Length: 254
Length: 230
Image (cartoon, rainbow over all chains, first blue to last red; front, side, top):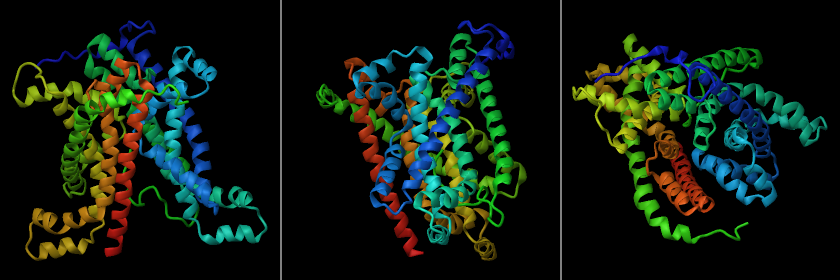
């Protein structure tokens, strides 16, 4: 078995005209990060809303929240990508559907990918937000009511500030997940990091160099985020609470 | 919005979807689960080993694979497996490996990392005294693991192991990137041939949702039952 290693391949010109192969991969990393960050913003907003309504005393709101989480957890991410990319434009009113389908190349796939990753992750964020709120002593909610706060005020000033500080570690690992999951967007032709490594392999036939580079980049991004999260966790840790990062019940997932 | 929804395409193709596609998906899921749990348990034992190099190797392997997207791992193994095969069989040229064998190896190697972390927590949940008691009775390391620690660890972690298997069942859909005819792959072939993307992908989503929802409810009930007994 012979494989010709050629690490200088990264400085050769890529046939897609964007510069060297290394340059192509770095642009891919940019798309990965842009996709992950935008989706993360969406996931935080929607996930918080869904997580909150699952803890309110209003029964039907709780049911809606539960149904939302079950819906996004029980369909593979790949299938959800296809639903957003192929099916959604057909089901919305025709004018809007046509507008979505006519978006210029990177955006036509990028926007559905952001919506898909964002909603997919929002269901997981909602689980964490709910767990965070439920981990608070019952007395905090009661104290809020006793002080004359309305329900929204109790959430805004009492429950959520505490809950978010408690769930920073699990939210950190969800952020790592969203970066990994963003690679699934290559199935709807978002040319992010993994897609570019694959393209490099197809143009140059240097399979293992291309994938090694992508792997190293993912590991470095992972490392940077882990270090940043460690810093953030120390900053927001609630004094007197045992950190949740090391311990906690093991859960399945990615 | 369902005005021009063509249910006929599903009726025409469901046999192909299930007999060819879903059979592949289920087979891959079950074999990968079995292999992943066995290899994952071995990795967990290595990570908890007092032999430092062993613990380091297993830890590095698990942490590396857990930081990389599954899609990238699938590509890695797709190109690596022929070389591994050549190395095992001492052949001079990369050997041809079938789609099933190649993706099975990928998922066993990848999911083992997630099963490993679950089993590690399971093993750590067993009081140390039980291992000491095993040694005091004259059991070897392997005997005390196989007869004392692992049966209890499996039992305690059964719901989490099954939940991870549901995740695996969903992850198997990603073999689509290698144009393999799993459930999603079969649906996408029909969808593209007949120009019925909306119907086929909606149908796939409904089937996955029904299967995973039913399984997760079963796991939840199992969890409650196990919790009561203890």
